[in-house]
Length: 175
Image (cartoon, rainbow, N blue to C red; front, side, top):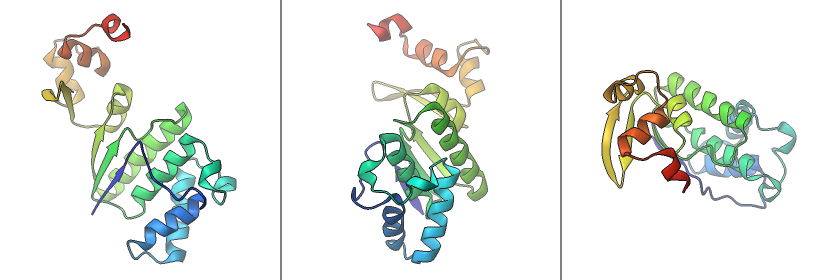
């Protein structure tokens, strides 16, 4: 029913990507053949090179390991998916591939996704409803358009909305 993708995904480093995914699938009583087929399909949709699927996890980049973590979360078609900085460590193309896949699966399976991120562009790409938290407190919630209207600036980015709502200036953030 529920799964998660975290920045700190744990794997058996000496096993391959496919072996790790089949192992995880077995915990949910998914047969090996079905798990292998599904894992391969998910990895391919995430832009993971087929030639790297059977090599050890220890030989994969951080970004490729993150794709395996994302694939693991989608093996069971969760109704609720918790995403904690899911595209950390990914190059821009991989990041888009992952975001596209997440949106596709969410639509196909009517999955609810909860995303935590500091990446406002990612929040815009993946979220219908956005909550902005500052110092542990919700300070705004709504759609992107609602948040823009809340500061009377419908043409700004989510990052600019965030900075205005939390009362910080970009120069303050860099200091």
